[in-house]
Every structure is written in structure tokens, then in C-alpha cells.
Picture 1: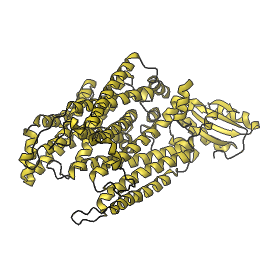
Picture 2 (picture 1 turned 120 degrees about the vertical axis):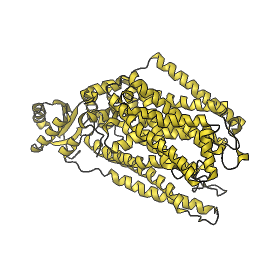
Picture 3 (picture 1 turned 60 degrees about the horizontal axis):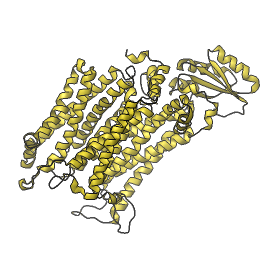
Picture 4 (picture 1 turned 60 degrees about the vertical axis):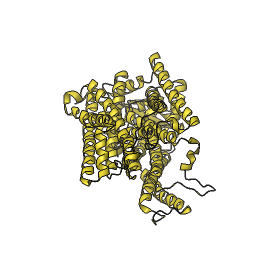
Length: 172
Length: 441
């Protein structure tokens, strides 16, 4: 959806509530303009549903981190144990039960690191250029629908947002 | 319906952002006093480094004193932050939203301070790298079968995970501060917020990532205090060597952490005019949770006695008799009364909705939980197997100085946080207005 078409301008319609924003997104399906992005001060499942978003793939990064961490934890404990054979009462050098704790902690640690990396990669943060076409009220009390359109469609989009009760702003 | 229903998005922003205005002279006086406390602690530690670990009161037979007591105490304090931010998030408990940020922050600071104590206890701080698994010419490695090394792994993991969780939760709010700020402040918050704009693609991944954070932090928090309990339970000392230690310690940790949340939130609520955000209902829910954890802790105290009696082991029976009637009986009864009996007062609605009672009881629980660690850690080794090896322990002035420094550091960090970063999650509060829960996926 994002950046899918070559455009001239971005028009943002600002709405005061989540319900209305979701309704406007649904109404837009009958028009030729494409929604570039929707800004909101908090995550809204109504907006997600209106945009028909798929589930985020962040979990795969988390899972990959977890698998890596699980094996790293065990490998570290086993490798260090066999480097110096500390035999106590003939008990095994590679002691699986205590190593589960190391394996578990590393699983969680690497899962979380994978999760953070996944978040950064998927959200493409840090992204300071995105602030150039952004209305700061969208972190406070406004929901902003940004439409990318050709210059000649500008008035139609503005009119559409105005008719829906939104405040309109244009990013050249 | 609660007071929260009357709030608007703009009001939430105004209330929270108002707290970030330039502080008064009183605030800087407080910061100065706390900094002096931290310096006192640092001076005591420096003295100990030069003179030796004997500057503390630990000696045979009680080699584990306030340094380990404070270590367990601060790890425990940390736990309720994760309970509130992760476990209650998974349960969609909307009442946790106003206090989640402060509790998470408390977690990060408390774990950091807890992490200092093994260093302090080590004495020869300059050989701390022996604990790290790094290749060396002697081919010596940490023993990963030791609960002390489990602890290094668990606490390090907990510190990293809770810091990342805290920062991730903070990003949308940092963006909200950035959008209202000007000048240098705007530049700082622009960098800190990573260019967050709250577009749907960001939220789509964020909600999913946050859910995984919560799902991973939940078993982690249980594992961390279980591992801390095994520092003791895997030793054969009477009073330590018990299979109930892991759940007993986890419940105790959450008990003390919830009490610390009340101790911090009640003054913060008053000073920052958060009454409409951190409502009496929120505080009441914490109090109800404290009743639950207090009952578990009380049950654990009783079960310890039952096990000692049922085992018919003379050493165990003597250890527990002495605990209640011996030299440290005062500390024991403070522990029992403050942790198990006083929280029962929260059964009365009038008490759990009264701010002075909530604050008073929360402080008593903090005191009680500190003494619980004293009774378990020092009390057990003071009176173990052989009568001629029994002995008593009292902290030295240096230990008191370091302990005072640690408390000063905790409150200093919290005061700095409260005045420079949003102490209530604006994002989650706005979400609560419409949905009543957390940003689940």
C-alpha cells in the first residue's frame, strides 16, 4: 500500500475519533485514490480492520532469535563444561538439567533481541524523513488519513475529506 | 464507571506533559539530597574496596549479609513492574495502564541497583570478569551448574529484556513529547523517538512485537526469582533447602513490588495531579492484588513450619524454632505481621480506598519484605547444623551507608525519570478510554 504509486502530492484528512476514521477508510474503497498511510495516537484495531491489514511477520524474527538462543545457551554451557572436567561424585560433566536454565534464559534473551530487530526492520525505524510529511496532532488527539494523488485530483480529495467532516492539509 | 471515562485525549496529554515543565527549586533540593545519599553510599563502597570486605559485618558463620539481602530485595521490587506491564497486559487488565510506565521504570532501576550488590559483595571488584565466560589462557570458565552463575545469566537477561521492553513502550510517548516540544528539547526527543509517526504500518508491527515482549517477559520474571531462590534452596543449609522456595520467592517478589508501586505512585499522583488518571479504583486494584500475594506469602511461611515439623529433622525443627523465638525473633515477627497480617486490612473497602492507609501499609510491607530476606538469608546461616558454629550478625556502618546509598540511588533515578520522561503512558491511557484494555493483537 505504502509508496505503491508515483504521486505528486499527499493530502491528509484529520479526524477526531477512531470510529469516524475507520468509517472514512471504508468509504474510500469506492474511489480511485490510494491510502498511503493512516496516523493515529494509539493502535486502533478498527482502523486495522478497515485497512484489511495482515498479521505482522515480527513473530518470525522472535522465533528465529529464540531458536538461536536455545542452542547458544546449551552450547555455551556444554562447551565450557568440557573445557575443564570438574568431576564431582562421578556425576556427568554435561549436566542437562542445570543447563536447561541457561538454555531457557538465552532463549528468552535472544527471542527479545530478535523481536526488537524484527520491529526495527519491519517498522523501518529510525526514520527521520517520515516527519517531513506528518501532522504532529496525530500523536495527540487526531487521526490522519494520508492519500497520495495526482495534482489534478487534489481538489476532489480535499472535498471528500471536507464532506466527511475532516480537516484537510496538503503536503506538497 | 470510573473517573477515567470523563477524560479526553487532550486532557491526558495536558496532564502528562504538564509534569515535564521546568521543575521547582524544591525538586532540585530533593535531587541534591538524594545525590548526597548516593555519594555517601559510593564513599562507603570505595572505603570497603581499599580496606577489604572485612569493612562489612559479614563473618563466619554469617558470610551473607545486607549485600545479598539488598540484592534479593531489589530484584523482588523489580518484579511487580513486569507483572503489571506484561502479565496484566496479557490478561487485558485495563486498570494497569495508568501505572504500567512507572512500574516498568521501577523495574529497570531496581534491577540495575540489584545488579550492583553482587559486585559490592564480591569485595575484590577488579576480578569481576572471572564471572564472564570468555576464553582465557588458564582455560577456566564459569561453572554453569552453579546457581550463582544461573543468577548472573538470569539477572543480566532480565535487565536487558526489561530495559528493551521499557524503551519500546516509551517510543510512541516520546514522539508525543517531541510533537509538543521546541528547541533543543525537540531535537533530543526527535532522536529518542526514532522518527515515530504512529502510522498504521508502525502500529501493526508494534502491537505484535509488544505482545511477544509481554509473552516472553512473563515466564522470564517467574524464572528470575526462581533462580534467585535457588541461590539458597540448592544449598543444604536448614531454612534454605526447601522445594517451595521458587514459588514462595516469586510471590514475595511481586508482593514487595506491588507495595513499592503504591509507595511511589501515591506521592507521584498527588504531586503531578494524576488523580483523574491514577484513580482510586487503580490503587484499590493494586491493594486487592496485594491481599492475594500476601495470602500466598503467609501460606508459604506456614508451610515452612509444617515441613520442618513433618520432617522430624532435629536440625530443621531447631532452625525454625529459633527463627520465631531466638535472637532474630523480632525481625521474624516484623516479617510475619507486615507481610501477612497487615495486608489483610485491605479486605476492608474503607482501608483500601483510603490514601493514607494505602501508603502506610505499602511502606510496612516494604519493611516486612526487607526483613523477610534478612530472616531467610542471615538467620539461616547464623543457626545451622552444629551449635559450636552458631553465631550472630549485625550490619556494620559501612553496610548501612551502602544500603542508604542504594535507596537514595533508586529514588534519585525515579525522580529524574518522573520529571524528564512521561511517567504515565499517554498512548495506553488513550486506548483505555475507548477500549478499556491494552493494545493487544
